[in-house]
Image (tube, rainbow, N blue to C red; front, side):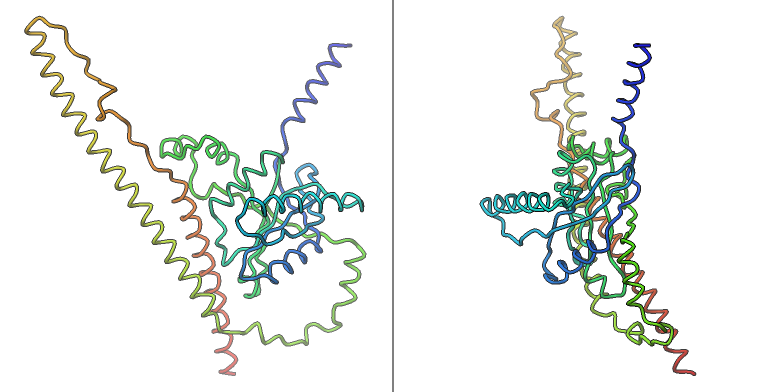
Length: 337
């Protein structure tokens, strides 16, 4: 009986260690309104804030949030920001509000959020929190009639590589990791209480079908498209510079291999002469020789992030262009009628 009880306890402990994968991020409607209000007030400046909630099974519930004060890069001000965060969480705990950190939110400009700083912030959060997400909100895209809100997390395979700081081509092929495997987008589910849902129903107009919203037929998308194309060109220039780094690395590598072959041929000829003279041959490899010093391969992380950003800009341009063509065809039909 004792053995079965001990065995069952060990089984339960083993199952608790394996965390269920994150499936859905459930956000309260009030939290989304707070995030939108904070990001729009300071747009185009980038702002961040803390997400609070509960980690329940495969769902991550976000029930509250608060903004971080805008600060400059200074150690004393960073310490004040940490104290502000702890004080806010203490005050929320005193009024019986969820004060468990489940991640953070941040604003972005035209989807330009895939940076090394975002990855470093993720890794810092992962040291203390088992599962955390980052809510990205883009006020510039929301002006086009789309709620540009997404929840992101780092993939497990990418985090393993980042901890080892090894982004060579061999390791990436071994892990089967490509540029699309850095971030994982988690579906967002908006939840409201029954009282709020009833109140929103009362606020709805009686005959919404008769209301004509001609602003949806706005044909001017030039500013949004121009900024996307400008950012896309900058990313293409950055990607070209990264490719030049790899070309320089491979040129040096081929030059070093040619020098190694020439050195080995010279050493083998020298050893043949020493054997003919009855002397012991010299070793064919000399670690002290700078010819055999390995050339460090540049990291592919920056090129992966730039490629991700290029794909994001292309998707945005494609989406806006598709909507613009639909509006143009609709307006053409209206003019003909």
